[in-house]
Length: 225
Ligand SMILES: [Ca+2]
Image (tube, rainbow, N blue to C red):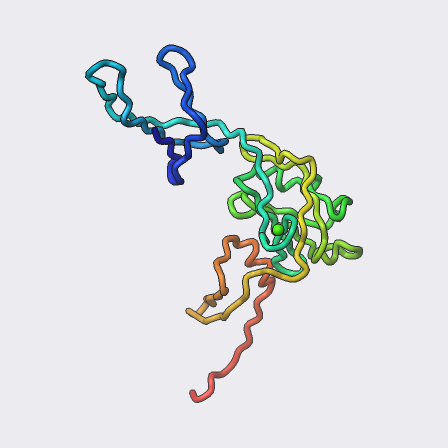
């Protein structure tokens, strides 16, 4: 018997298949995240002398999400759960699954060193609500002008099914140095267009806007022409 999440890996049968009552059986699997799964049943035989085989059977099962989300550790070499420092003022926190946008954009769900976020901090969901960026650019004074090396607390943000993070508060450590993708080069590709290259894939236009901020173009004369 196979239970397969569509587009993803096969789900392992976890433990034994038990008889519930009569012809009804129960299959144990690891905790499943919500979504559409494809159930295939093969090689089942009855108890008659002929051992009649059941025709292969496949069906789609819709599973309700009851798995609590977690915060993804972005630096598995360092103890604790790390965020990413995209620029000296921008912190990215990644979740284990797609989150409820309103919940991850609610500033009250984050603390900075145990205290409330400065009123000038902006919080924006990115990567299809699987991550959030906290932008400290407009903070005028105090510790929150420099988020590097800070400890943030993420409170009970929830996934799209409304399951909150299990812990009431999770410490998330901001790295000491910027871990943003590095800018590579710019190239003029047309009369009104400039192509920008980065050394790694950047998923969000928001981050690009924040990283670049402003592009200055100087009129120059190419030598030899
Ligand atoms: Ca870590």
